[in-house]
Image (tube, rainbow, N blue to C red; front, top):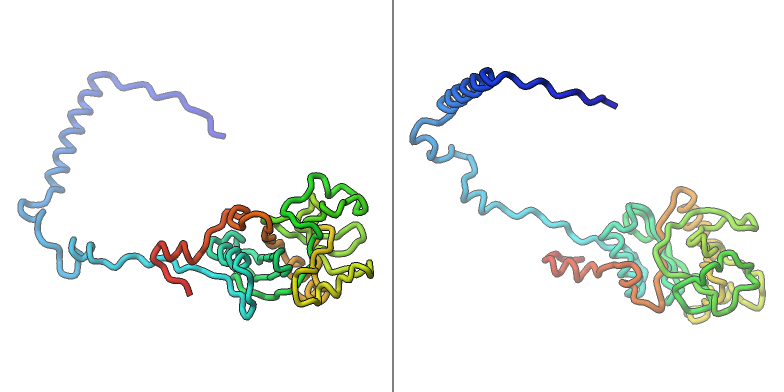
Length: 264
């Protein structure tokens, strides 16, 4: 670190007065040399130089066009489209790939960093309706989790590849609550997890303890390769609260329409 230096001693008063007079004389001389001759200060600009009229009539700067997520042939719910469009337009995903989990439709959408859909699939979710995990539930053994506590929490998470206590590779969505995204495990025949995934409606897709169960083939093709390379943002849509209240998001089309921009 540089050390501080003491101030220099001030000059004697006579030297100071002489310096002031000399400075005023020099400044006056410079002013005479730099002032334009009389009458030239108001002359018209040269040909081709932009004048006041040209500056006022210049075209306005272009405004940024809205950006939307590309769902391809998928027909998402309004909430899923809202969140995907918003994160692309606002760059809430920070240039990372992102995943949208629609709990009400029991469906997952995987996007690349540009907001293009790379895959979609039905999923299984927590048995209980709700958007919040019970405090401390991640520290409880599974047999001690009550049916009404088996919720999949809503919110914005940074998903990260890891492994569970059995050594199986999973994607941790909310590590503290022990909520992960993993391959479906048809361990209990009575739960009929594979059949629930294959059914045409989402009404029977609520069965897990809170984790997001994905078909094994989809996990291997889309989830595992993505999170093997990097982290990604996971948006789990709410089912008991408004989506905009959870993510503080905005409707892209309405916002840009108010700004005079068009959406495709």
